[in-house]
Length: 221
Image 1 (cartoon, helix red, strand yellow):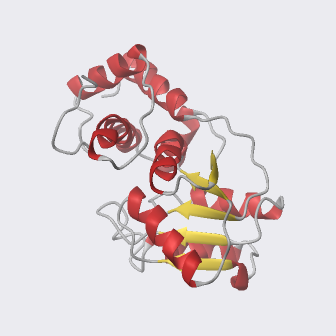
Image 2 (cartoon, rainbow, N blue to C red; image 1 turned 60 degrees about the vertical axis):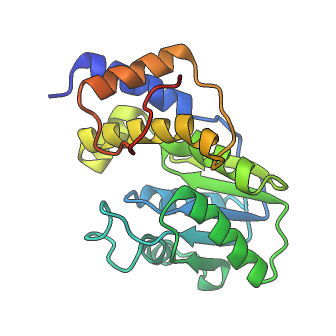
């Protein structure tokens, strides 16, 4: 059972991940593959608003998406964008990435292969991974300007849309763990994590929201 305290703690993690970047025109948008088709919908909305001339959808499959997106996350995102009226010639598909770092590095390689000059990137992710996505780009592609964006939703509404609040909480905890641990591994740029967010994260772990944790340290210290 998810308690009121769990919701309060999850809200702290949710709010921390929000970058509050104002979307502006960029060279390209990169939609990061996941179980959430809302990422594709948001990318399409940004395209319609003239925020980029080109879209890259990136992602293979994971244990969460292998059944619902058997052809790969990027392919299903592309299908969704085509259904919503985006021309096929403005969509590139990167089908092999299995983590956020690969999402960026493989998308970058694809764009270079296609001869696309990139000075700015609009990263579209799940709402609770905005900051992690931003930090990844800052580390592995530091020469580009980056705007981080996601579907604008409140946490309860988002959890309802996914249909599994525990899964969302597990993933939020996992996303924050990576934001804490990965700078030490050289995977992402260091981000300041406020103490109240760390305490909320640790309480959620103690309450069993551990389904997306990786082995290793779970504390910021």
